Image (tube, rainbow, N blue to C red; front, side, top):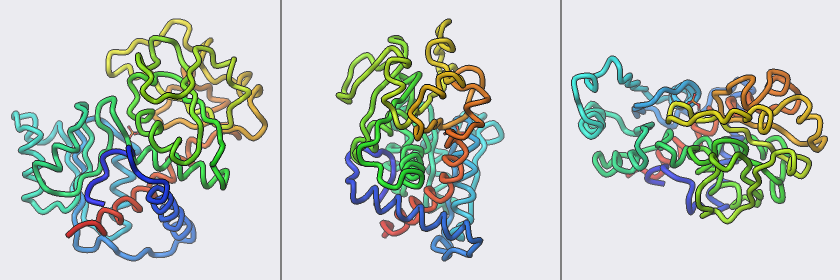
Length: 298
Ligand code: CP
């Protein structure tokens, strides 16, 4: 693997290899075992031009656990404030000695461009409203660890799907793994077109009882999207709605969560919630992706 910028087109076999690698790392870390220092002598640079807690910190820990050096770039204290471009920043990181770049940027396609500019393996840490492939992968890991066999699961993605890069990645990985998707939200937050060819509903209550996984998304207010006035009453995951779900059904959310908007405290912290399991699986999943890229390096 030369870069990891999208889940589009990845085969079930490739995805299962990554998922199994993540689970092996997770089990070893859970036993507090030292993992092989597969990135010893390598440097991983985090180029996050947008804020992040989970993705950036879990990449840092993943890289360190594999023995890599970590270069962390912080835009407000970098030469970006003097006008340095993304291209010059990326090429500077390469010249400093980075071997792998993790890139988050508001403009779609930036990770691919950084790969073209530097020739280095690039991992997409989230590009605009396009994709967030390690999030989609860690979500698949979370489902496999929880359910075992995911073939035939029914997932509803609820909320601001139109502006969600997480939904963009879930749309590729879940059908490949045999998970069916239904997009749920107000018309203004559903995709204008339906290139995914999956079901959609403007009523959460109409589909709730048919779902094994309710995947909640945050309304992307930082992209100028307003929360519809009736959003909480129509799409908020309350305790009452959680009680109407199938007994074995689960709640997921990529974070950060807006408590009291897309999910209540009671549900976020309740027994159906896999939200913190998703975060925990982020470290081992990013370790799996880093090793796959190392294996693809010349
Ligand atoms: N899920 C996710 O991408 O979270 P962060 O923005 O905190 O990295």
